[in-house]
Length: 215
Picture (tube, rainbow, N blue to C red):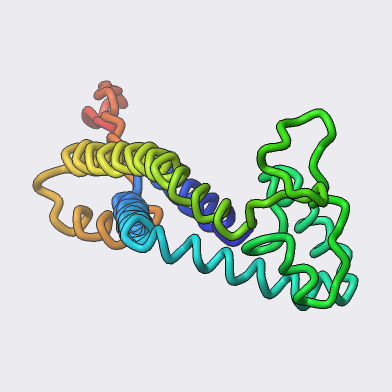
């Protein structure tokens, strides 16, 4: 939710900057995108370098849930562990014996399906593979998919930064080059807009017998 709010705020800033033709808001939009881009690169790099440790962290967290929350009849923990064991076709952390070691009965989610291959099942009808190993393998397998998604998002952010720079240059060039005060104010005021074109009054002559007047 917090990430969504940040992205919405950054997008709103960019839209307002473009609509109001504000260099200041567009610059802040560029800085925000650049910051998010840097955090994503750092996060993806850390995840790739420590991909094996991440799998171990998930495995350790699952071990705590099984030994503590599942044993305490935490409904959310029980549903989560059962779903994990059914999808990954695993049981416990290292094997189904982990349930006995924690003083619990082996849940039904550890039972092999009667219609599937029995090679991964024990004589008691439970999955042989532990969920810890399965999770570590899934992390190593999916880390490249996550990296690809990160690259795609980063590409979109780079496009946003390029567009903001191009728009800033276009707005800046539209200012009156001789009006230094207005150029300064446009750079620091959030809602400074392009200088409006002055309407040139059409001169007309009116004779009152005294002289000729021009607007």
